[in-house]
Each structure stands twice: as C-alpha cells, then as structure tokens.
Length: 290
Image (cartoon, rainbow, N blue to C red; front, side, top):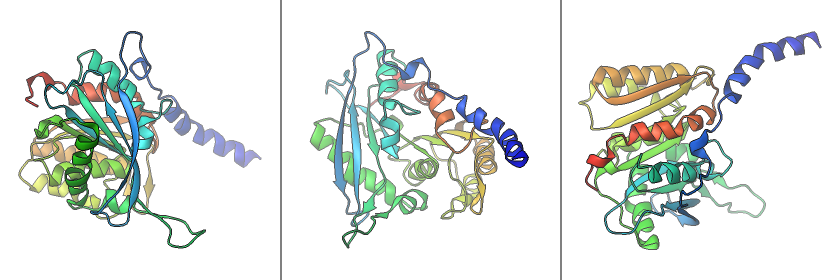
C-alpha cells in the first residue's frame, strides 16, 4: 500500500501537467458567429490498395465560390472534429475565420485507412503506421490525386493550387506524416503543424534532423508542439527528437516555431494552443493569392 501511494505521488505531477491544458474560448461556439457545414464520408483508396476510411469535410459559411479557398488537411481527423475533444477544429475555424484571423479555409479530416477482414469474425488490419510513419511521397500523392479532387467534385468547391494556401496537421505519427507531405511535396503543401510528432525510429523518421541540416531549405512554415513528459521507448525519446528537429530547422533557417510544454503523449497541450497556432500559421494570409 505504501508503495502504491509513493507511485501515485511521483506520477501525480506528470498527469496534472497534462490535465491542466484545456480548450479556451476560441474552441467554444460564439454568439453571432455563423457555423460552417461538416459532413462525413467514406473513401476506398487505390494508392493505399484495399484500404477504406472515414473522412469529414468542413466548408466555412463564408465560402461563396467567388475564388479558390485555402485548405487544411488533418490526419486522425475524427479526433479533430469532436465537439468536446481537445481541438474542436470546426468551431475554432468558425471563430477565427469570422474574426479575420485566418483565411476562408476548407478543412479535410481523414482517418487512417483500414483493410477490412477477409474472414468473418477476424479483425481489420490497421494501416495507420504504414501511411503516417513511412518516409515517401505516397501519402502526399493520396491527398493530391485522390482526396482533394474528390472533395472538389462532391462539394462543388474550388481549392487553391497555391501551396502557401495549403496546410496539413497531425498528432504523433500524424505529425511526422504532416512534415513528410511538405518535405516531399512543397509544391503542394507548405504549412505544417506537428503535435507531439513521432520523429523517432518507427519507420526511419529519426533521420529528419540530419536531412533538414544537409538539404537546401524548402519553402515550408513549420509549427512543432511537444511535451516534456512525452514518450521514451524502444523507438526513441519524443521530447529529444522534437528538440533535434527544432534545432535543425533553426540551423537551416526555416520559418518555424517550437512550443515545449509539460504534457504527455496526448493532444491536450496542442488543443489548448490550437487557435494561436492557427493565427501564427496564417499570420500573413491577406498577402496570399489563392
């Protein structure tokens, strides 16, 4: 019993540090702010053969079709659209777009793919790590060749082709995926948000700090969020990996911001600062040509 009490005491600061992060007023509906429309869909991919996934599309109320809209893609999208989740992205979008603090932006929220079971009673095969942690252009092609054209067609919207008007965001493996998309295809996406990014050796992502240092800088804007009490396991140490990424981006002269908190491997800290993250990411949006 004494041992359990001791363990509870030494664990308490770690958990309390994470629980202290809560969504702010920009993540709550505000009177007089019109709501965008959020719809749910499914997609069967050919670039990731055999996979199926749910995804959501957010169209802001201010989109009128008079000009192309900016677009922001989210990995693990189901978590970002939850009304009582850590991020509440559609509500934040409503408030910031209405306030003129970010452009009219269509949100695309994608869950990772799963391969349906071949036998009754068996479990589907999850494709998340392969899609998110692999260092290749496959996920970028999935977005540019399959998902974004689908969104334009089904929702009768026009998405900007200007890569400075395209952003991508994710947590954990979804965070390194966001960076990989921009790294591989800066012609398609140039704004990157990584929360608790897995820049560790799950599928070779630990090489990014060296690649960033040794490669001619790419026209990317990168936001990194991390927590001091994040993971430390056989794949690597997440706080150290993100510090290495931030140092590499600094060395190479990137437009970046690194926010280190006290949280664990969760979206609480990233969600609490998400509105300010978007303000920083889109700070010069009025100068862009969609």
